[in-house]
Length: 294
Image (cartoon, rainbow, N blue to C red; front, side, top):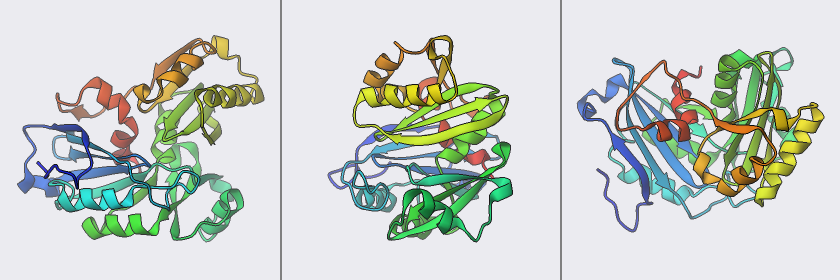
């Protein structure tokens, strides 16, 4: 267990299977997720196809880089976590990081040119300092996700895991939804932002993120998007991905406008330690789906 004290952010979830063996870490995969207010990670045993660890830290102190509108990421706390956590610094077979942030844009395959990443992102979001631009190929949706990483976060990750692969949070959500569902309207809420996605007959028609300052904002943007696509919310189920309990006020209001809200189901293709409950499998569904991203 890591040292827990004033220097270490609070551990919100700490679930480790009895089969976790530090000496076998090079047979394991590490998935890390960083957002404005949390750092989470899980460990997957690639030999027995089983998730054997889930840990989540709560962050508080902001620093510029991740989200300019909201003050960014708690970088100092993330650095402290990496320095003290007993699992993050192990040697792994592979490692991926998922950044939860609103600065991204989606480009169809037939329009994508990997030399224009900065141009795509700047056109939609303007310029940003101290960042690098990357892209993920979301093959199930036939598109590329272009996004930026703060330089300090990239450097921190590569200090501890030099071969780490970088991803944006929209990549696993879209890939999983397109593979699993045919026609849906779905939302993903995180750190004061709301992503809305629409699929029709297995094709992604819409995906965008909206800044949420009050619970009513979530309903407003949902209705605006629904009206654009002639969707009658009273007759539709709304798929929710992520921490359902993090937005009780928004959920309560949304329930008055839609038929029902259904949490996105975690994949049944892998095994989870019995310590990792169904609630946590749903809460961290995007983190668990990261391993399967190309």
